[in-house]
Image (cartoon, rainbow, N blue to C red; front, side, top):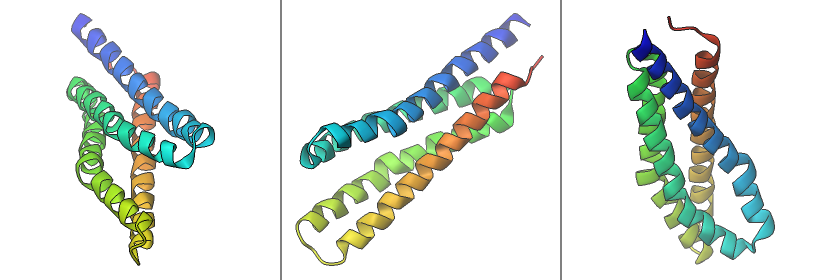
Length: 146
């Protein structure tokens, strides 16, 4: 029973850190960066910050998934999907977004629409990831695994 409680506590802490980080970045940091900094500086800052943001999500989601695999397999699976989709965002989607943003700023025709579509895809994925993480956190908060 003791190990069970330790695992449940560890999972709760990991998922709380994950959801708090995602919420803080999405609803506090990102808007403040673009409100307080000039657009060029803000863009460069966010571009430098995103790989670290994604890495934090990958690590916390993967660790949470591993801790939950025996307590709540569905929650572990959701967190595994969050980690996997964040790897896609970090390694594939983000570089494409940056490329098409640069090409658009250089005046290349048709690239702004592609950038907008890729950026929208990243926003939708981030929203779905956040919903999944909050659902897991709520499940951990309201379900007793004993």
